[in-house]
Length: 172
Image 1 (cartoon, helix red, strand yellow):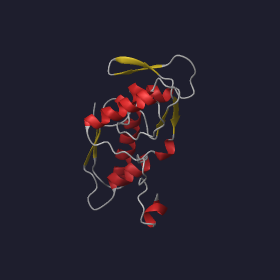
Image 2 (image 1 turned 90 degrees about the vertical axis):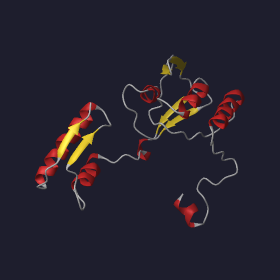
Image 3 (image 1 turned 135 degrees about the horizontal axis):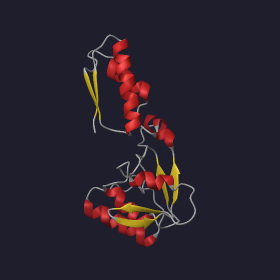
């Protein structure tokens, strides 16, 4: 991508690229892909597969062995994304609940963890405890309970070590 940008070319600038702008266009694309089985790369948001346009694509395509679902980020326990991701390499009857209805997972599932955009614990601690005005209060709202507790402990210890007064709260 950097090379293409350096050459004055857009990394996603190719003739077959379709940017979906409206709900109606989204529905047409989903229906087209479902009815034709044509190969496509769908880049859709909502990392946990719990809402948004990704759910329509999954409903239409998960049951078809010709498709692949590629995850590039973390999937929280209890989410449809985690269920789908856990089916990676599974053989046999695996289903996921999408909007209250169960769908068979026949598509190939792949996880590419190295592309996750989340900062690690060290990056988060440095961000919160450094800079012109370090955080005085941090509320942890995202992640699993155990991971939030561990991060809260490290943030508290680090801020004390740096001589800072930082209140760390874990949201329920």
